[in-house]
Image (cartoon, rainbow, N blue to C red; front, side, top):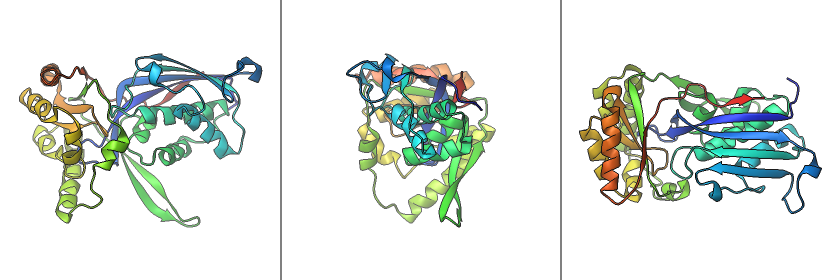
Length: 320
């Protein structure tokens, strides 16, 4: 493909872990960030603007977004050109935020994927989708958010057989079928929780019993998502590796969980590192579950945004 001068990239939010699938499973949701990259002459960048980028941001929380070279989207943009051994061109970037920041919905993954995809298109698409994915995983540190953000759907990621030479492990990505009757309901609170803080509370070692517990429940989760078997999902959403520790950081967790299950949800988990809470339910109960989760958190003095979403099946897409 010939290099272009402008490209728009839409990237979906993601929910990672889904209970027992810690750091290895995630799903793309119908909630989006939009990024537009425009190659410009360096004279376009006004005096006082840093480096080779001009960034404008609209949408909720726009004032919290960095608009200089420290912006994660731009760092990913530069990363791809560095990987190619090229100097990134001066660029104007327009960001439209639709994914809340620091809420466990993969906002950083949208930036990493958006920056890499945008740069790849401007450069004439020298990298394949799998090569872009490898760069995204390297930047994020783990695959659970960036893989579904790039590819769409629900995805399980695992390291493959070590390759020689050079000695490295490539990723094996498995599509996880998601029964269309299962509705993800997200309850997004009006407070943030950093991934760093959420990781600091985790133990450095776990027991063999807890490891076996999660292995069994992840297997059951995969079958439950595929078949829509409610009994399997009710059991499968349990976890012993991260949620028992992280839920203490989320005010009202137990109250919201009790309300969601009473309204018909199969179960409730922490979305990513939190504090967004994710309930899985069938279509017939989705409105009742959303209302119950909202009321429960409001009873704790928290004002959430609660939405019934769908699984995004397309992942990141570009237009030019």
